[in-house]
Image 1 (cartoon, rainbow, N blue to C red):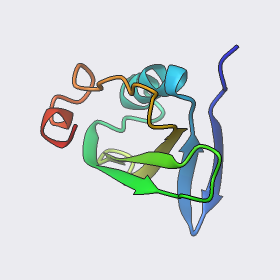
Image 2 (cartoon, rainbow, N blue to C red):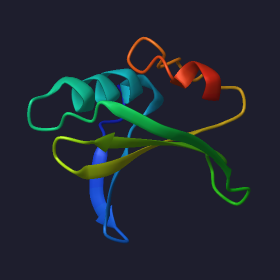
Image 3 (cartoon, rainbow, N blue to C red):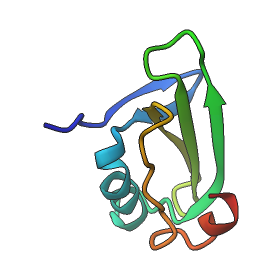
Length: 97
């Protein structure tokens, strides 16, 4: 059973924690839903938290020009886990992946 995305506001920013298995569907929803429209991928940022159970994180930073808002999506993972490509949703991710 997969982990469902969990969202909250941290430091005045919307942050969603998604499981690896929910990453693609979460990003696709945020880009295509009429209430969201996060059509621009700003950045993909890796992070290493050596003291956490799932040591590595990737943050996806998105922008909605139409809604004038930003959002961060994070996934936590271990080194042996594979992260799916998001280039079919955001072609610009190719350079960052």
